[in-house]
Amino acid sequence: MRPTGKLHLGNLLGALGNWIDLQNKGDYDCFYFVADWHALTSDYGSTDQIRSNIVDMVIDWLSCGLDPTGSTLFVQSDIKEHAELFVLFSMITPLPWLERNPTYKEMKEELVEKDLSTFGFLGYPVLQAADILMYKAYGVPVGLDQLPHVELTREIARRFNFLYDNIFPIPEPLLAEVPKLLGIDGRKMSKSYDNAIYLSDRGEGCARDIPFVNSARVR
Image 1 (cartoon, rainbow, N blue to C red):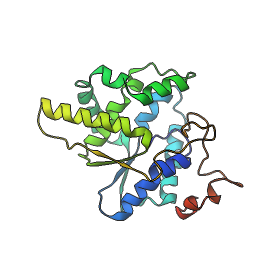
Image 2 (image 1 turned 45 degrees about the horizontal axis):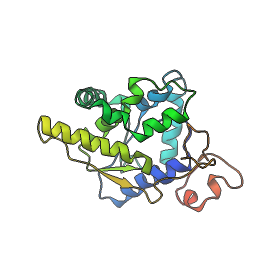
Image 3 (image 1 turned 30 degrees about the vertical axis):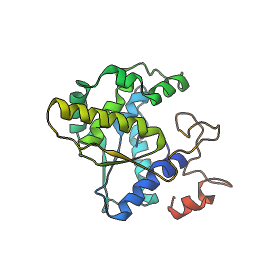
Image 4 (image 1 turned 90 degrees about the horizontal axis):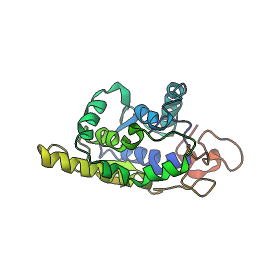
C-alpha cells in the first residue's frame, strides 16, 4: 500500500479488510508492506510527507487489526532486493505490455496536473511484479482495479520461467468482498482524485458511524 496520504474506506473495504481476514484465517503466510518506492511514481517532486505518511498508515493498519505477530509487516525500501528484481524483470518486459495497462491510461487522463510521463510511472507494474514474485506468492489480495497488474505479474512470471527456469509460481488474485468502492464523485475512491472518505474522518456519516468500520476497530 502506497504511503501517499490518509487511508480511506476504499483502502479498508478493497484491501485492508481482506488482509486482516487472510491473516486471521491462519491458512496464509502473509507479507504486507509499505510501498514507499511506489509513492515516488506519481509524487516524486514532493517527498516531504512520505515519512510521516508511513507512520500514520501503519498506525491505521494496527488499529484495524493487522498484527505483527500474525503477519510480516515491513517497508519496501528496507529490502533492496525489490529494486534488484525490478531491474531484472524490466529487461524482459515488452513495452506494449505496460502501455496497454488500463490503470496507466486512466491516471494519465485523470491526473493532468501531475507529470506522469516518466519511466517510473509507466514501469511501476514491473516493480509490483517484483514485489509479489520475490516472495514466490501464490495469492495476491487486491481490489478490482489491481487485477490488470496481477495479470501482468503472471505474464512476467511466465516469460521469466520460459526464458530461464521454472522459478516463480503463477499467482492468483484474492479479491475482497467489496473489490471496488466508488468515491463521492462516482469515480473510483482515490486519494489522488480527492473524492475519498477517510478512516480518520469524524462526524455524522463518517467512518466511525459505519458498522463494518466499527467492527474493524478503526481509531
